[in-house]
Length: 136
Image (cartoon, rainbow, N blue to C red):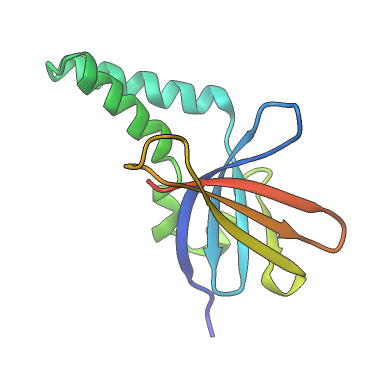
């Protein structure tokens, strides 16, 4: 039986008082794969999208929307990739479903009901991890 990708969503891992770490949270039928992204890579994607929107003649709100969509859509390409290919990304880590001892998913509100956010808390044998998941 081959492993298949079920979904890929943008996520930020909570890290105490430090800035959250951006990830692509890829869920397969056997494990979760975390692909980290550098902040400068996300910033560059947002600026490039804003520039393309400017060249297309969009106004301020159009450019702002293009930038937000580019920065939130970084996980989308992983939905159609092979899990073996995803795992080859530098610093990618996987969490086997069998190693998760507890999981809690809760909807969090940021005041904007058009884009719900979710908080996923995973309890692993060695530590607890919390992720803020965004719907693309």
